[in-house]
Length: 368
Ligand code: GAL
Image (cartoon, rainbow, N blue to C red):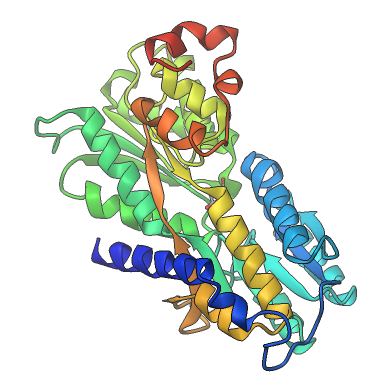
């Protein structure tokens, strides 16, 4: 928790410095080695489409922020790999050949992409690891505090299971893709809270984060444990929570165990309202995406002081130590927190959530 408090203090400080114009003093003209003006191209590589966050939030927010920071002259060249690591390597190679000015990389496979990261570096193109920590000589990293995501999920799951002792209660763990380093951190964070408190009766890593793979694994778990003997499901994200729910319903379960999630997807928020899913984790995409855009533009324009102010945290990857980073905080999203998170931040409006099928649940939760 101390680490979190410190990093929040650091980012607040950055904001207030910017507000006083101190950072502005290092802006146009005052940089040690201004390399580029506003006419820049940012290459953006995102990993998949099954999860709605990438096309719906990350890409448009980054695009708008780059435009805003460059008097509308900067462009974003965007490619989505659709969960295919080889396709992403090809997309990155293309961006290197196109001589984009900087690459923001959200890796499908953080290890396999290291060769392309090295190629970009050799071609003089800085690489910012976006959301997932790519291996190889990256220049910076921006993400959420991913261990905290796992801790928040697990704490909520225990809270939903009630105050009594749960050491012999069986839960299922549905973790994310083994090629995504975040998945490992979510799992570590969750295990730090769950170990010794519940029985983890079945645990899976889910290929490509695909909801249908989670559904198939959940069907197996139900076969092993028994449909009515599952006290809770740790699902690492909302897409998989949806798959888990389908498997439970197909097995005839009517009193659902609490199920966790992550990403605050619209259908997950609706499931939380009706009680089909217990919680999600709300991660502020604007905070992450705008920080990435600021880093990319500062890097290309040689605004070193601004870049340093944006990257006060330090993170190690398997290949690189002390990577300048920014880790953004996260919050739990349970029924009582819908209006204070996704609605307050303008991610969804009440009418996005409260469609006719959810009118009654919305009224009950006081959403209007
Ligand atoms: C993680 C990311 C999550 C989610 C997941 C795939 O790396 O942090 O927000 O997008 O991938 O669904």
